[in-house]
Amino acid sequence: MKIDFQETTDDLAKRIDIHSRFGSRDIDEWMLEILDLKPGMKILDVGCGSGKQCFSFFHHLNGQAEITGTDVSESLLDDAREKNKAIDNAVDFRFLDFNQSFDLPENHYDLISACFAIYYAQDIPFTLSEMHRLLVPGGRLFTTGPMPANKHVFYDVIKEATGKPIPPMPGSSRYASQIYGTMQDLFSKTEQHIFENPLTFESVEPFMIYTRASMSEDRKLWNSLFQTHEEFEKVMGQIEEVARKRIERDCKLVMTKVVGGFIATK
Ligand SMILES: C[S@@+](CC[C@H](N)C(=O)[O-])C[C@H]1O[C@@H](n2cnc3c(N)ncnc32)[C@H](O)[C@@H]1O
Image 1 (cartoon, rainbow, N blue to C red):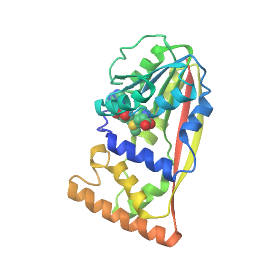
Image 2: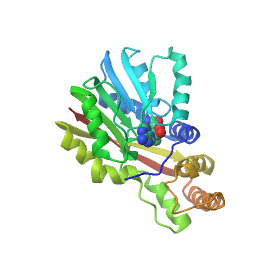
Image 3: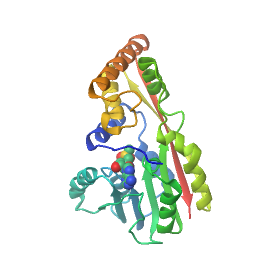
């Protein structure tokens, strides 16, 4: 399954910023709670983007860990490397396309994480098997992704604004159909955790910053709603109108992120 998706540095940074300003819970803290990291661990982060989880793991362990961050996007890796200078380049950031075999040491990592990334893999069993191969026995794989109840209000506003169905989102649809089942098949033990984070918008502007960064033309997941820049702008206008009316009516718009965290032990 080929997923036509390309994350951009700017869109990712805007979405991360909106979560930290309008969310009521910190997802990094939740991950650290359920992962129970130990000093000296060897950690591989796959689909690391600009390094959010790598830096969170690094600071939590006071630098006592071997951390490698990998991604297919050179511009996101450049961004991560720029931030890495502040910690003396302690994280090893390198290119890795998770659709190809992983050119990294086998039976080596205590933890492999893939946060908001695994569902873009072309062949889930292949990518998960590669991760399994690189873990030490007893090592853990951690993946996260949106669940079916995720951002219900966001999709509801888009449906009302455009009168069109929401295209299937790879995260929520592929976890249920494939990812969790494959993790159960390959690993000896799996567990699920759920994180809910309501994002509260009292004005329409930040909601639209999030919406634009989420549906941006570069992400290509929304081709059934717009093809050209003009169509994109028209849809943004329609969404803004619906969101504005809801905020006027209810004084706020609450969009709840519902994220699954899946830990599998080799
Ligand atoms: C939504 S971002 C998440 C980034 C980061 N983990 C975070 O939570 O901020 C998804 C990431 O998956 C990466 N990705 C997509 N396809 C990939 C592939 N074939 N190989 C490696 N990374 C990929 C993207 O470049 C992007 O950085």
